[in-house]
Amino acid sequence: MIKPRHKKTFHPVPSTQSPAIVAVRPFFSCFLSYIYNHVIDMMLQLTHFRLLVSNFKECFLFYRDVLGFAIDWGDENSWYAELHTGDNIKLALFRKELMAEAVPSAYQPSAIECHNKVALIFAVDNVDEFYEYLKENNAIIVTQPQDRPAWGLRTAHFRDPDGNLIEIFSNLGS
Image 1 (cartoon, rainbow, N blue to C red):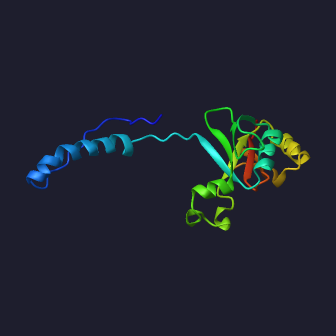
Image 2: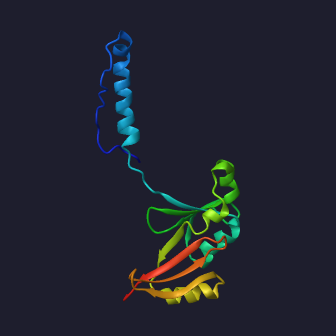
């Protein structure tokens, strides 16, 4: 639930003393106080990462069967699914063409602009073991396991069936 952090009262500075301004000043003062307290000063809560996918069924099966996510809502024959990530943030899959109906094409970036703008990052106990598991399950491998000392991590990258970039990592020395 979004709640204002604190209440403030907005007092507009009168620019004139005409009867019309004097009559509407209380309304505008109240209205602006409401806007300030309930719209401008709100805290947003992240609830989902939604992947817009072209091949819903294949992606659903990949995230459920290969990556092992429990399903909170939906199935492989639906158009939307929510996957349980272990905390308050959901990973959702949504058919790309249905989102395109909601967002007109004039507001959609080109495919070139979208390439690798987002990566899903998952912590694993052992990058090498999980990498081998992914290879055995025909995941689309992007990079082999690699130490990244500047990051303090060991990482590997792959793609889901729709081409979304995914990184697995573990801390170096763990």
